Length: 196
Picture (cartoon, rainbow, N blue to C red):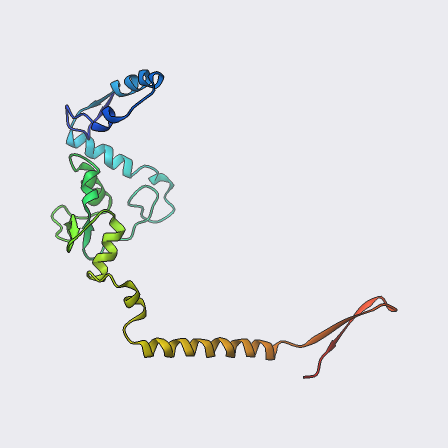
């Protein structure tokens, strides 16, 4: 029998009942799920989460690996934890193990913000939230890349074409023009320079 310290005692997963198994698999399902019991112990859950995060640390190829064998640079600035971040563990032990014990963020650090939305946009994806937050709510990504000054864009485009044409001309000019002929009587190749 296995105990799950991160699930509150007496909690039943709704997905267990919603799955439809064929009759043969139903016997195996009942056997597998009957050996897993919810314990709901915070300190055990925190230890288990930390052990999971430190798995593979012996294979670290860097001076310091915070999570397993992966190097993660020191966090700077504000850290945005999205809505999905707190769904990882019912008792938040995983988050404490990740931020405090693995990444070294203090428990009372005010740089960590938890958000379910940025502005009026709900967060369903951490990277999407990061991009929206870094853009300051601007959704016009083409305008950000191109900018509002079209004359500068046109000048850059013309300059790029002139630069490419100049580079192509220089490579053609510096490349020696050779003519290769195969002499049938002597049985060899004759290479001559072409005068421009």
